[in-house]
Length: 426
RNA sequence: GUGGGUGUGGCGAAGUGGUUAACGCACCGGAUUGUGGCUCCGGCACUCGUGGGUUCAAGUCCCAUCAUCCACCCCA
Image 1 (cartoon, rainbow, N blue to C red):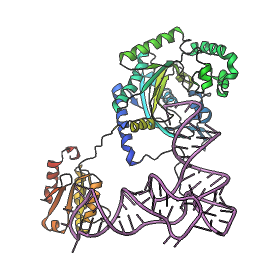
Image 2: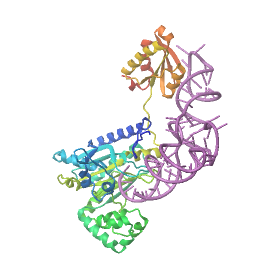
Image 3: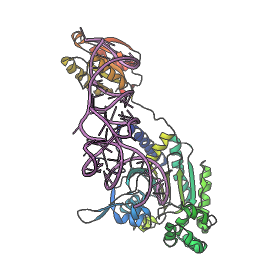
């Protein structure tokens, strides 16, 4: 039997890699402009990092991790997200001793053992950024601004930013008791998941997708109703700063993210038309996380976006990615001697930085022309016995459909003169 | 983890029990013995996802299994 790729994985093949390159280029560019430096952390980490960082009550840790014992009996996990690793690296490399804040971004594969569906894979890719060491609400706005500007640049439209504040540990206590008090009598009407959440993580009942639970929680005290004074002020400043940089957002007091580490600001970006998995970006503030994994008390905020989902929206909105592969040259050689000579010319052109091809299948001239046409080649250099004898070569311009015979030594000069886009020549 | 749909050549897609499994696209070659994009002609299938079973006979029916798609849950 043919061996297939594992469930939920993909081969990113030449036909689509251009779109990845486009996004990767835009990501590096905007991060550099906003003052973020790339960090590359291991693809696998000690399992405990995610248990403590992401949280024991989350679905990610409970049922979605790729965990195994290595030959030294260490429990290892393929990273399901990037934030915990970045925080670990911040502590391990003593970034807290550098000027703060430390602004980092990452781009790479993540792994979650889930059932696949549209926009959901087991190996998927995230671009994320984190700011560590600053609690100023302006930082929250800067991070969202980066996201907003990135989507604008790559040409996505009609996205919605959902914003909320889930409070700090102080308001969380109040939130929890008010919520439990309110729901106490109707606990039995909640879905089974929510009955479970009632003790473990009552806040998550707020964004349960179950219709019955939603009906029961129409008037519940939300995270915004129970914010402490400091959190309230922080949230107000974040909103002011967002308005100052022209970002449209929608407050959603029932949005609670599924990772335990979030505090205060939480946000998601939603897109339409790509199936049920419409969140293309999620993030928030996690002021307790660095300390949780053993570092000094350090505020932090960040986001992650799914590359595959962005690509899905780009496809859906038919955003054109420009193609910079132009001005190719193909050498059409006829006969053994011409092939040998043609190969020499090919290598010389390549040394001059010209994007050049040659037939490698022993095709006849007609087929080589066809091949050139399909490869989008602009110039075909024809070399046969006749040309060999005269030390000449025919240059055919495929777009104009005309051709002329020139001397072998004049090839480079001819191409230089005619190729509009001279970046392909040294 | 739960529920539904699908699985025929590189891709798309007929065929629902009975001779050598249509067709379209792509690919290769020819018509034009040294010249592309159009046209015409021709070529290109060891396993109809895999493994069992029913039957004189299965791509067509049954079971299992795998993959894939969609949805729930959750998330990027």
